[in-house]
Length: 343
Image (cartoon, rainbow, N blue to C red; front, top):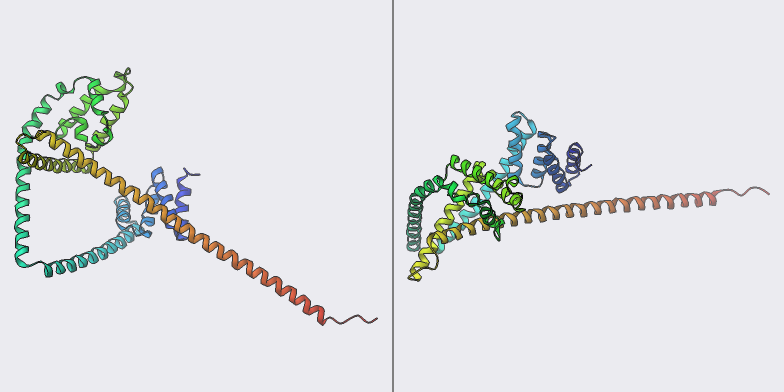
């Protein structure tokens, strides 16, 4: 039964004992997704990840178990093992970096090092100045936008068209863009804008528009992202990076042309969209590589198991033939030694 968490949990443990690590991971993941086995299912997942050498993922799962059961013996040992493995990896990485740094120092002269230090210091100071300036510029805009956000929403049709414009899956990666508010908005501002948008776009109020449900779902996803503190912080960091890059692009364009083709806001908006798309593209690439890696692991394990089965089958067949040969030989020897009956 593919939906029986207990069977999946036990089979995952059996696979792990048989050194079929990727199969153990696959069953453990499905077991955790079903969510009925509690810490036992999570421990199966952690053990499979650890067996595959995915130390960070395993450590995360073991710690999740300890949050619920602080004295869980397997989790305690798992945390120690994973942290030890990660420390060894970090030590090797640091050793390699030190070797590379020594090599660089041998190649680059003292004067060049000083020039590089000065250059990076200048870049850092300039970047900090740009960030501070942008924060100051954004504060009044954010306040003004929040005060008038109800007026800015317009009609449901306008918002649906905005949220479902071409390539909206990429554009709507930025939750602040979906809610159409600045990234400096407070939690109260976000909550008010979400309520206003969700009331405006609710499918029950837009039954004549078949796209209303999809637009409404985009708003729900954006609110869910901003409700998660880590995701909200990450989104704000990406927006800050995009705005910095957008201003740099605009200033370069301004220096090259007397009248830039696009405004500063347009440059920053494009840069923010681009950085969200790049991060999502990389995330999808990592997931794709992970899926392919797990597939290769399963195929390799299956190949090894098939080899073992074939080897056992061959040995068994060989032994059977050897026993038959021995029995035939014994019978012939017996016939030769058998005395003929007197006539």
